[in-house]
Each structure stands twice: as C-alpha cells, then as structure tokens.
Length: 379
Image (cartoon, rainbow, N blue to C red; front, side, top):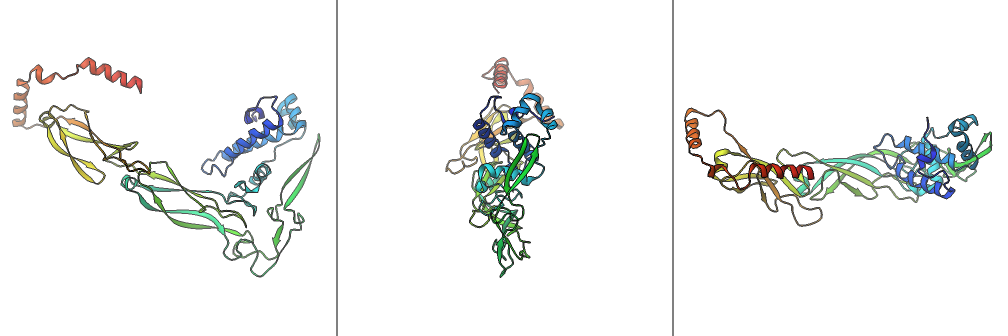
C-alpha cells in the first residue's frame, strides 16, 4: 500500500501549494539517485517523493485523494508515471533546470547546457601513509567528451540539423487523458535529448552521444593526518558536461587500513606493551613501537596492570596543522607461566616475604570499584 503523500513530503493536510513545492524541492535534492550513487534505495525513495508531489500538486487529484485515498485515485485511472529514470530526470529538471547537475542517464546532466555529474572513488592507504601524507593512484570510470566529434555527436564533416521531432525547441508536450480532463506534461525531447538539433550522420566513435565512458587513472595527494572515512574533493575531474557546461567533481573516499600495532583515537595513537610481572615490580626502561620505529619509555617500579604512560607528540598530526597527538602506552602486566623448579623456588621466597606494605596501593579495592562503575555509567 503506498504511503500517504502528506507523510512522504512531511507537510500538513492544509499545506499550501508553495509549501508542497518547497518540500518536494528539498527532498529532491536529498534523495535524487545521482546524489546517492551508493544507495540502492535512493531511486525508489525519489520515485515515492515524486509520486507524492504529482498527487498533491494537482488540485483535482489532491481533492480526490483527500476524499477517497489511493483507492479513489486508482478508480479514476491515475497511476504515477515514474517507471523509467528518464521521467524522474524530467521532473527534476522541471524544478531545477538542466543546469541542476543531475541527468536521466546516470552520467550527470545529459542536456547540453547542464553541468557534468560528480564521481565517487575509493582509495586504501595504511596508517603510516595517513600520518605522513601520500600520493595514491585512483582508478575510476568517467564519461568524457568524445575526442572525435568534440561533443557535438556528429561524424566530422557532416552537418547538424534541426530536430524534426520537437521542431528545434528541445521540448515535447505529452497529453494524457484522465477522468478529470486532459493533463499536459512538458519534458525534454527523447530524440535530441533537449538539444533541439541532431546530427545527420552520428559519430561512429560515440554513436552520436557526444560522450563516452572511459577508465581514468589519477594521482591524488592524500594530506597528512587524514582519518578513515574522510573524502577528498578534486574539482572538474568528474563526468563531462555538454557544450558550455562544467565537468563534475571527483570525490575520493579514503580508507585507512587497520594497523596491528596501534588503535587511533582522534590524533592520539594507543598501543599495548606487555611487561613481565617482575619487571613491573622493579621498574625498567623499555622500548615501544612508534610510527617511525621505536622509542624508550621508563616503566616505574610498582607499575600495575592497565596503567597508561603517555609519550607526547608521537601520535598523528592534526589535519592541516603542525601539532601532533600523543602516543598512549597501555601496560599489560604479564604473569609468568610454566615456571622451572628454580623459578618457582624464587617466586615462593618472594611470596613469603611480602607484607601489606608491598600489596596495598594508594587506592583501596572498593575505591577502584566505585571509580570503575562511575566510568562505565558516564560512558
């Protein structure tokens, strides 16, 4: 059962024509499939919004729905006409013009006066490259202007003539008979794609489209400090437009591969260092990994499991800034296993000499428990 068109457009039942139009414009820019190329549901959601607008923008159709609902519309012979992507593009262009940047063919604006569509690509880098910056190769498919006909769709040396179907206007009117009278729609001509002119001999390289799909490879500068999931915009590297239009942009989604040594938290890096229990008790100078090698830290005597030492300025750089985050070292006190006879004797001698002064810390067990509970409640 179709949804209530008032709910789809999020307008009250007494909404004015201007409110309905404004709501649809907003939804159209958010839901159009060319804006959401990775969302398989985008086209269906856009169709739903377009169908809702088609009902509420027509006073007779709206009155029928208000009285009888969707059943009344069907009884009157109404059915939304959004079965093809072209009709969606036609409706979108009716609101935003052909320069809106979205087209019926999935390659940005198809009409010659429109801009080209944007392209999305993904690049994978490791954590070290994210920290220092890198140049990454991005491979993607794009629609570019045909280099044989230079975008006009005609075989070189052959004329371009006025379209017989639309008489050169680039627009067609379609009349549909309904029980409520005739409904007239205007949309781009399907023969000349809104250009008003067609080549007598279509270009053999692009079959008269003026553009063709190609594979492109581009070197992209990834800035130091970039995080997983951030995007880089590269202007004019997207789909080509028709004559007079600007090419779309390329958006590169950066994926930073997991690093087995570190977990990133903002600009800080977190690592775990295993410390044998005797070493934790006595204290020592130990090496920890960094992005560029290792560094030494001083583990104080009496270190407890889970304590964190911070090494300043050895984390990730802030994007576009000179400052760095810190390296946080979580100390994992390891209890020895598989002791030899001599080791067991030494451990027993140590155990027998321990007193409360050796075992009691500055914070009691219950104080630690309360602090831990408060931390989890706050999280």
